[in-house]
Amino acid sequence: MAAAGLLLLALSAAGCARRDVLELGDADFDYLAPEHETLLVKFYAPWCGHCKKLAPDFEKAASRLKGVVQLAKVDCTVNSETCSRFGVSVYPTLKIFRNGVNSAHYDGPRTADGIFHYMKKQTGPNSVPLQTEEDLQAFINHFDASIVGVFSGPDSAALAEFLKAASIMREQFRFAHSTEPGLGASHGATAESVLLFRPPRLASKFEDSVVVFKGHLTIGSLRRFIRDNIHGLCPHMTVENKDRLRVRDLLTVYYDLDYQHNIPGSNYWRNRVMKVASQFASRGLTFSVANKKDFLSELEEEFGLGASDGAELPFVTVRTKLGHKFTMREEFTRDGKSLERFLEDYFSGRLKRYIKSEPVPEKNNAAVKVVVAETFDDIVNSPDKDVLIEFYSPWCPHCKKLEPVYRELADTLYADPNIVIAKMNAAANDVPLGYDVQGYPTIYFVPAGKKDEPIRYEGGREVRDFLKFLKREASHGPVVSGGRDEL
Image (cartoon, rainbow, N blue to C red):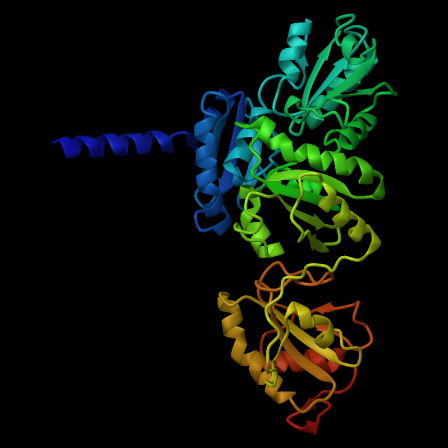
């Protein structure tokens, strides 16, 4: 009986967890959706791999948001009318509804933490009204940055523009406003101004904690002001904001950072980065710090840095907007001098780029030439050769299916001195710039004399299809089976 009771309790708990995500369909969507002030709806298909990957994070976020924001899901394979009505054509699609009305497409993070924080910002007003200094202090004492507008009165044209901007950007930033005279004056506020408060946890002597905007306020000018100042000299990079930070050349220092439980310890290394960054900030490189544990797999796969490297000392990497990567191999010294030396070498062009590459094959005599990142230039960018290269992954079933066909093609053209048939394991080697490899296999033709103009192959996957393509694109008529054949 006891065991049966425990089983029933477990099943009941599992059922409750599942109910954190409301299931909606054609019959009840218009009836149930308006009951919720803010509703995040996932439109999905059970067979969709991306949907399966998102499901556990969506469930966790729903549990954390319970009582604040309702999360729901619609199975589009059985509720096609609802999905069609809201223009759903790819899975999963996430949309935000307010009182049953489709309000916005959800374009935030797809992790449990990311969904939680993004949707928390969707609750309440677009901009929080502040009346007193205590209201202001409570609002800005937050994990994230705060944007506070101070205006001359409720009829202010600047206030109206500020509220429009807040409604557009509320998903990204926190907004508040006041029409109380003198509120925020101690921070530099005047009758018509906007204050950007950086998070208290990131306070540093190397930069101001408050930045004041006093220009002509429009949605565009406010957006630019926030964009240029929100991150400061050295922001905290997270899984959620990394893509916004990486639009520029970015140096990141990874260590055991934890702003939830150890602010002084987290700022110990950041302050050393800030000191050095203040010397190099005008040279086109941006800076950030990040939790090593959050990015460990990325550091291992993309920079060759393992958990045991450097022990408790920080990792330092540079990733440019063009995809070039550099790592600091010298230990991070507590006086910051090693970081200074690394940056001097970086700006002087003395650093060697880090390239993830398999070892160069000792023998490479087969008809299909094996290319690794270290030999890409020598083989693929050989100026006098036409090269057909397949980017593959060892676990890809489509690649395995193509393998005998591709090998037969290479055998057929083995005698041709002008054409190279090659392949590269894109899961184990960095793919050079100019090649868009989002899935496997991806095949490119790289013509002789035009190595900066690779052509993506989109044709059939039989030998005759490849030969027809090569006849059209190759610099010389392909030599087939040892004899010249103009096909």
